[in-house]
Image 1 (cartoon, helix red, strand yellow):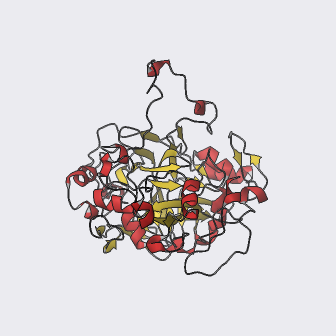
Image 2 (tube, helix red, strand yellow):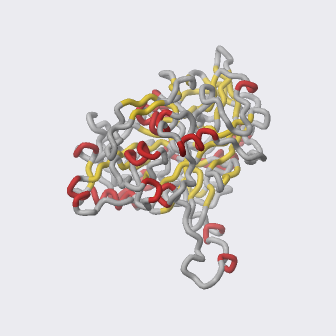
Image 3 (cartoon, one colour):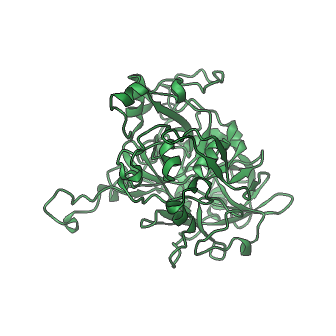
Length: 465
């Protein structure tokens, strides 16, 4: 079990909160069971929902969303590719299909290096068992557009208690395996341990959520001023494009339906349908989340940008929706969510941890931009606008401890490692931890490696192989 090799970590500048051995992992302490209707071993962390309560959640099920029929006007992406001011552009930035190998992680076909065409190869093993090699879509509520690197999923319209203001949101993850199977969402047992950072709400008769609190202002303009060439991170200035109030976080605990916890990021607030009708793209980012590529409140769908990453060496696509720090939200093109600051960090894989780890290079290879197959890191991101190729911990089908709440672990290659030519692109966490052990990688500025004190809400969408 992977967590038995990990070291106990405490967030920088904070006191130790849990005195529990990291060897006592979530999967080791809680018995495994198989959820009806799924093929994966799941970790039940709460009492099974009654049929009546499960039926309440089933009202939230929507038909699988289909991608927009017309070609999207990806104005923000096109501008970012040609503009020298892409760090101040609004919107999602370029998608995961980049102009070179350093910005495109889509795996090569199996026919490369063989004498037979691809049509002679059988289906991937993942068609039989999702944990085996091959592409797997994990968030099953809509269609992934492989050509553009987007996913179109159902759009929900809830309301804010008291004022009745419109809350437009999506659903990506849930802490109950049966609800996950019913709605096509990702299951995350760890979200149960994040209840203290969740808003509360209730399901109405249509399966939509009436939220007790939490608002987001989507009007601010995202802006970043990078550091000098070759050292673009940290930036000298950063402001996110959307800012939540003190009561906003993407998680919501459903009080009238078994206290189930959903990951329900907000994509628009206090606007009517006609104000956010951009079914063909060309979105007004003063009204909606920066990761929105298109939004259709008539058909109740939203198309979101996908982001490249790795999990245990396998390329993946995920969403980036919220961050607990303003700097992180600006770089991630997402929403600053203050309520996420209540999440306990630094105890990944110990019992009751609500997070998994995401490893983010600050000074990975950036020379040559997207043409460099080893490209990685935040300086590269701020230098050419494409995403930093982060490394995620466990995701469904690879591990049991998936959480959409990722504990950011920023790391820096040492000057000695760079001078000796050891710096490269890393793709899995134990490779990184080994380099830390070998003193080739540290925390930023030579600090001790560990939690950087903020988290990112990044629901997994697809494993590419």
